Length: 303
Image (cartoon, rainbow, N blue to C red; front, side):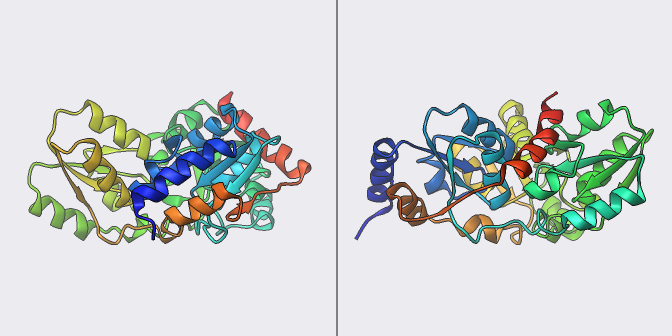
């Protein structure tokens, strides 16, 4: 029987032997982060995939992340760590539905959150991350914005860019939307003086209470610079665990115990082991026409 340490050692050996680069999203569990070559948000990992010298990329995350990595690394073999790891937000709108919305708002720039399928990215003008969305929307020449798929992130941007007209769809991350204003009030009472850091995928009535609102990467950067000792974290609870490992002299509390992404939790250390052995995961294959069309919106983001 393997222990966690034994399995991690085997993975580290096999990834070198089989020329595999392991990318882990920050919402993965700590045992997986410890054996990853790179840890980060979805787009940052895709950029690392493109720069990595290895011929095989293993994405420990969800399907849209592996698709994005494939879009940017067409010559590499890209594996998704667990074939059933999807994203309800990325999959809640179809390309056909988006084409109908584009006809409804013909003058709007179509802005796609990175948490979308390749098929949706192919229909959009520009792709954005939670960290870059505000700056990119401000820079767009269009006065009308059709933002998909997260109405909470879109609404957060709209509040800060009142000079533009936004069209939002009813959608978002079901995990972040489980956090309520009652959770905020309870956490403030339980942990007085703690700074409240919230992801903008949360409901607006939650985000407005934040001492800082921003992407997961932004939250981590904020903590690194902050002199505070106690923090309430309003995003996936895995971040609380990772922060406890990084800053054991500080205190971190989950804003809601319900904020756990089941799709991210599907990947286990054994799944990673099987992938580096060559017996697990799913290879991501995208038709060239779709990949190139989706890449245009990512290129526009980088520009």
